[in-house]
Length: 249
Ligand SMILES: C[S@@+](CC[C@H](N)C(=O)[O-])C[C@H]1O[C@@H](n2cnc3c(N)ncnc32)[C@H](O)[C@@H]1O
Image 1: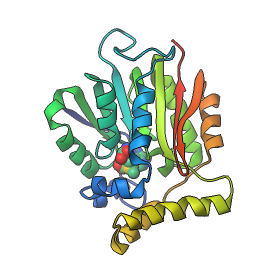
Image 2 (image 1 turned 90 degrees about the horizontal axis):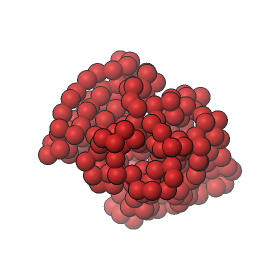
Image 3 (image 1 turned 120 degrees about the vertical axis):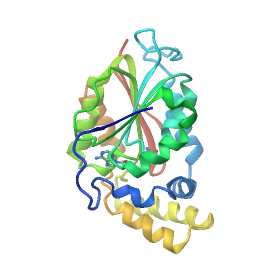
């Protein structure tokens, strides 16, 4: 497995650098509690990446070689594992600014280490050159300012090979406060029913304090503005949505 540092990641405060590392070892075990539609949500991302821009199954990269995948904000590799299962034999590049999260990912993928490149770096820096057949992200881009989120959508489009897809499994802002309140309430009910402790909930609130959710309408607008040829929300359950943009063949 190749490991490199790229981009700026020198802040240690809220939202910067290794901020997520303090939760790295407990991260995976809490996910099902914090995402009520967990299986369907990640599965939708896996299904979307498996389709090329003409609807055929993605079995090779655009150049006839292995499928090249970039996971933005890969963390412990939870989404990356779904991508690896959907795209057998793919070359996986994991980009994240938190070394502790990436350490968990290295452990997860130790048996297929030769298929992976782990990059420690900032989503706001230049993305790796590519081209990539698949660029995906799970619950990471909403940590950026909305203007920067839109920039990442555009930068991903620039790095896609023909027929490639950008897929973002994201959390959304509701279009009205009453619905936003419901988004939150129903997830808290789910987490508490599953045994989420008050201590874990307090930590979750700390993580959520830096979230900068935008509406589904904004997400789809950014994809259109960035020049993706086919744009769709392929999954939605209240706060959780998977949006996708394909580049034509
Ligand atoms: C909630 S975790 C999601 C991890 C994984 N994608 C998943 O689906 O479980 C968010 C990840 O985004 C990373 N992240 C947040 N802002 C970042 C940035 N500006 N540059 C690189 N990584 C970032 C964090 O370090 C963290 O690992």
